[in-house]
Image 1: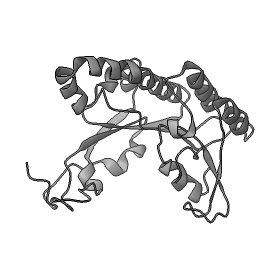
Image 2: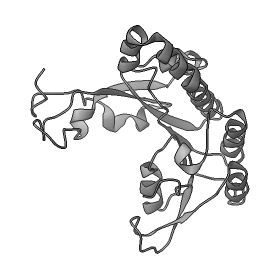
Image 3: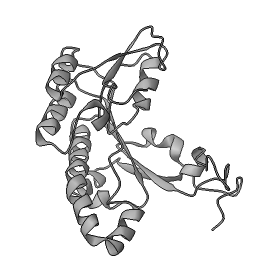
Image 4: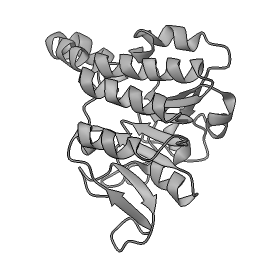
Amino acid sequence: ILDQSISFYFWGQSSHLCDNLVQMIATSMHKLSLIVNAKGSGIHLVEICGGEARASQVAVRRRLKAGPNFDLVTLVDLTDPQHQRHTMQYIEANEVYVAVMAPVCGPFGPLGRLNRSVNPDGMRRAYEEHAPLAQFCGRVALKQCQRGRRFIQEQPYPSDLYNEVPWPQVLSIPGVVQTVHGRCMKGLCVSSGQYKGYAIKKPSSMTASCHDLTFYFEDQRRNHRHEHIPN
């Protein structure tokens, strides 16, 4: 996948790295809004901070209607209020069934807590930069629940992101679940060097509007069937 070229996908023929996926590229948030809103309502999935948009790729290959990947790689900055507004308008207007979210974890995860004591000024700047995104994802999750639709979000575990408004309200909604799993159980391992092939201990959480979306992450805590990096 080429950076800055993943807006959303249509099923078709292509000879590049994404076989059978044809990309449409928008050069600004305004143009992206015009294009995607022309597709009409009834979108199965959009991604927020989706990076390479792998969930969208899988969705399209399964003949689902995938909306945009709202991410910096597609020139969408969700710390910008205008971009937030356009994104929320799209989700509402197109009745997006599932919002798949993976916002930046920097100041909220375990390493962020360490950085708070080692580099408090840098931590404060990181928080000020990323808090608007964390809060926006919370508003998307809340709106999805209020509309009877779905969301799922990935974060490291533990994460202070869930202290950001309106996440406490979202987590109090009946049916919302959070499952902790070991990334090593999904194949996360060292790719090179002395410990190549060793599993990496990295607990993560999947928070979702219903149990169905977290089913495959349950009972996936680390075990002793593979060898981890020595402490």
